[in-house]
Length: 133
Image 1 (cartoon, rainbow, N blue to C red):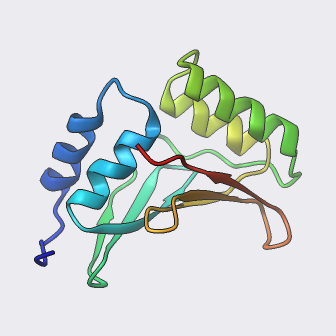
Image 2 (image 1 turned 120 degrees about the vertical axis):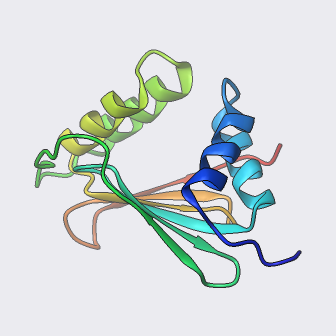
């Protein structure tokens, strides 16, 4: 694969390709443009994308900042993920719900096909495997 320079425009194009489809299609679309992983700060939706060549693209927060809970509630995290997958909540509501359940950050590992939700410290996390499409 040739090295592609990451840009906000390129990320948005990848997202549009996956629009209206289940989350694994977003993984596939980002992988196609050379994204290895992305890191999300739940409190304000600041994202850092890393390409397979190690290049980083930081996208500015796009929602008002809030304070995630310090108590990790695994069942509430799983419930929020299910609601997002079912389409009963939007993405920003999802961020608030996982934040209220003690998630502070998450990493979408596109190469490893998983999302790792991280609580207030490293002993609290939940890993979700993303199926191939």
